[in-house]
Length: 223
Image (cartoon, helix red, strand yellow):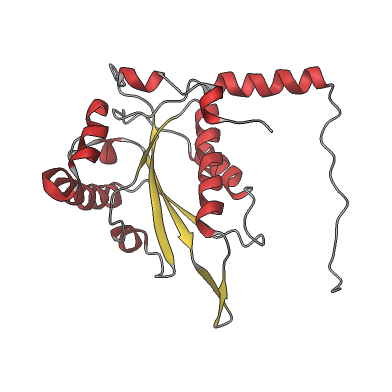
């Protein structure tokens, strides 16, 4: 067997089972208030918050520890304007006939449409890319379980931003290759999602049906 460098396991804090349950339930209570926001203000969010959230995302597990992700944090007004133009063009095609009727019916309660002004209003956009392979010293190195790894990292990103008291919206226009151009990312990276980050606009609302979540009995089984 090939020898490899190993480090001692770093133990978790010594906690009682009661403390572990309390901490788990406290996190549940915090995350249960998370909602997608579609009306943002232009109030600034400190760069340090974004940096901490990206570091948390970067701590996610990944196939073979390849860490096949890249996050482009976008603050520049001209970049956000270019993204809005591209997104709204795709969305107009989506809502004007490209999407099947059942899809349109599914999103109708959310009140969504082709206009996405928040893409320019919100202080930050974070484009999340999946790296199908990495290039080191002119050699193509394959990444493994790329989409699974990137989605776990994105979950940590959203959880950190929510814990920091910042609103988010995950947007997935299709196709999204324009993000490679705007963010100057190479062809081996595929855009997976665009995360809008900021503070809710005064008077912001949310669809009533998003409060309802499936109970534990419907989303889990125990063997």
